[in-house]
Amino acid sequence: MLNSTHLSLKIFVPHAMSDYPQVPSKKSKLFRPGLLRSSIFHRALMLEFASMGILIFFVLLSILAFTQLVRLLGKSASGAFAVDGVWAILGFGALNYLPTVLSISLFLSVLLTLTRSYRDNEMVVWFCSGIGLTRWIRPVLCYALPVIGLIALLSLVLSPWAVTKVEELKRRLESRDDVSAATPGIFRESKHADRVFFIENVDLGKNRVGNIFVQTLQHEKVGTMVAKEGLQETAANGDRFLVLLNGTRYEGVPGQLDFRIVEFERYAIRIKAVEAKKRPAPLNSLATTYLLSNLTLGNLSELERRLSLPVSALILTLLAIPLSFVNPRAGRSLNLIVAIFIYMIYNNMISVVNSLVGQGKIDPGVGFWGIHGLMLMLLVLLFYRRMTIFSLRRIVKR
Image (cartoon, rainbow, N blue to C red; front, side, top):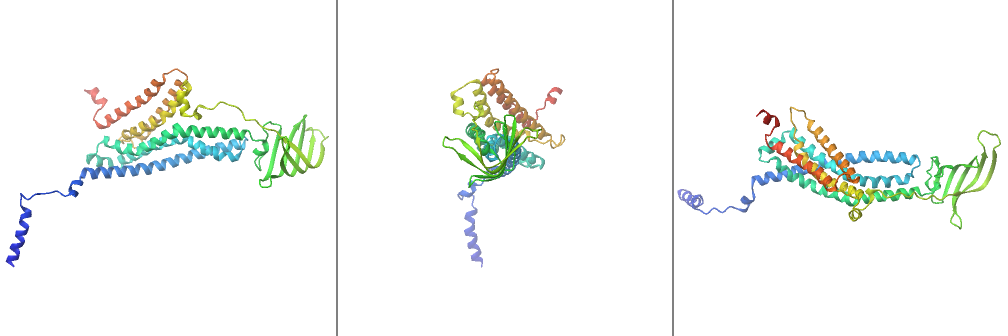
């Protein structure tokens, strides 16, 4: 028993000697507490930013889509365009508003996430772990830069294309004849304001309509026709007619008793062609390449508006870091009110500057870099304010 114990000690002693070469393993080199802490910090922030941003984006997009749908249905009911064009206009219109919705979602997701961290005292834990305020810039940029790239793509390329498609669709709907634009179950006035149509049902397969009501005004006499069914025919010269079958025509002057009633088996009404209104293309529908090749004041104003969307999204996202600070003594919602106020002022200033650039009252370079440079100065000042004990009141007392 003693020999075995002595032997085990001999085997163990060399490993405990001070001059024994200590070679650290690969695992000990890779394990760094600071790196692990930074990785956990980065993953936690990215996940919370993304979840909050997706939620805000879909809420804002739903509100915008609902309000636009109500407006378009109101115009369709008044006869501005057919119902079948509502969904296409709504889709292209949503694509046009996406840059603004993404910018607001990006700003609010960072602001609300960091505000919650302040309220739940998570910020204190991160600050005590050695993660300062500037360390938040990297995860915020990793989250924001892909979205800002998408905003730039939408603003410079896809939004003008969507506006162009909306204008083409509106012109095509305006050029449709009265019968093609008629909606079953709705009274609709013709574009020449001399006829009123009502169609109860439509059979597209057989090119027939049922239970038709048509009222016309000719030579100061009102003619009203009612038919059980009708169809569309095209003559050899290209003229189109609405043919009423098995109906009755009432003709006379309102207020007098000399109405004439005629029953017919076939009555043809000529469908007048409608020419689309010619109007200049709006600036927001012009391609960015065209704006760059034709640098007029109006084109420069529109170009600056498109470039301001991704630039302002980047600045606002970084502004959300110092603006998310919550002062328990000042109330939990004060920082949100200040942040929304700054956002509104920033966007209104961009709109005003773009308008002044279009009128030639401000140099384009001064207008663009002046407004964004001012916001960058505010960004640096707010970071400095949160990272130091700087206080204007203390300096005045000194």
